[in-house]
Image: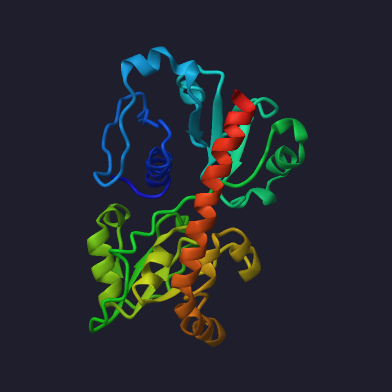
Length: 283
């Protein structure tokens, strides 16, 4: 299955079902049904009967729907879950009517429109809903021999790509990251990972494998970057290649697994709170 936003949407569906709720997937991909699922998740596809009774359900939309997909199921009960930058979509929403949930307020405090949305009591803004899939059975330090480095540009705009990696460094292409075993093997056999995308989970996955991680700055200060990322990014990752940052990454790596446990517990609590709030708002 996919990565990033796609995966956490599926993970939320699975988590809700594991807690005894009735959650299903409604695939949308440029108007074409898209039915790929992760076999380890309990994520059934919506049935025609459920579609016929859609107003009995609360629908969760990600932030990147637009046009006819803004409210694809034409339902009155829906939540918009902001998994990434929503700025180009905000003007299409009815901000006073929609229920908004955020992933750790990801970069939203920097935008005046979103800041107003958060502070506006009529927006029904409540709290964060942050879910990640760590795949701890795949991403861990296998204590293998290491050599060389790897790098990824991902979402870093071309005009901001100022390479600092060695010429023989292995590039992680866009579609490579879906092969989790391959990524784990790469992060377990290279010494260093240069990450030019400051908002990708690859940096955490590499750190989990014991690979030295350098996030290459291009738009944020260190404090801004930390504020814009999940708490697990604080450990085992250098922001820039200064000696102090490399020391920070090395000296805090042993705290990463504990922080992941804390994060997972907090995430589970947020799902419980999310369900209670939906029940309160829509019932």
